[in-house]
Length: 345
Image 1 (cartoon, rainbow, N blue to C red):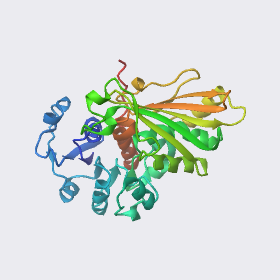
Image 2: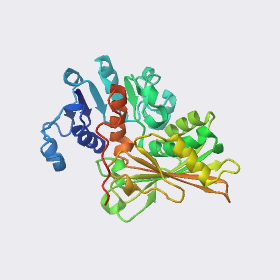
Image 3: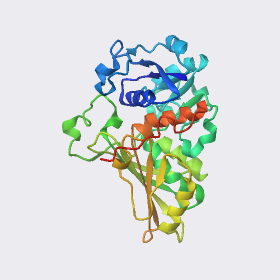
Image 4: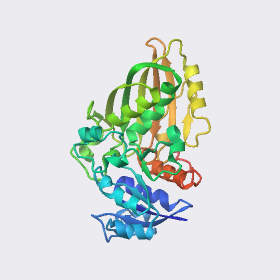
């Protein structure tokens, strides 16, 4: 049994990690931290976890290092880089759900996040935690940088086409829509219920902080610099994310060819389903699960390859992916704690 600590456990990503880790056969939760809720029982903050027996504590690195082998960091950007070096020095595996170690270049991070990167020496060591696109690098990692929710869906949709030559050119368009839980637990002006309910809005178009992360990984997959047009949207639902990706199709590409190529690319993947031609995914199919469902169509008139990917932003987009990565690093079955069906209604 591996002892884990969830740092920032009272936020939506942190409590989702708590929920999943409670049901994991190979992990034991040794500590859940929250500065704001320290001293409170988890079930008093989240009654759905009644009976879990956990209480929030202050995020003390030394105390956590005494009781845990793994630190999941479900904290905002900049907070993770302040904690990760000490956890690594204490010998813990660090699985970071923030953006602090996703980008290869510190200057790019500083440009998009408006803060100095205080441990750029760790960027080369950090392993990007999208198992379907780089599983082998995760085995034996010390520091895992879990992708953002938008990048996860966009990359699962686009990368097979770029790697196999199904898509040409250097431009990718990503139209993505996410539930409001992606904005975090603290309500904001646009995520407060009266503002978000029965309203669909685009936000941070051409300026969202996930843009350089998606561009970076698209470029690696294609072997060339890629131009990204990214338009995120907020939809009036709690959880779920649908990314629809548009790429320039190779000459003569048909929907059948593309579906066949994607099915081969994801053959054997425990959490990815490629739908047959004529069927596109919906967020309801993956709600509450670590699954990604992909649908593909070729618009032959415009020579456009259209690939849609549905995920749950809090599971495959954050907490479930973090557990999937930890399973691989620790040598546990990759599906441990995650192999359960989604609700069907």
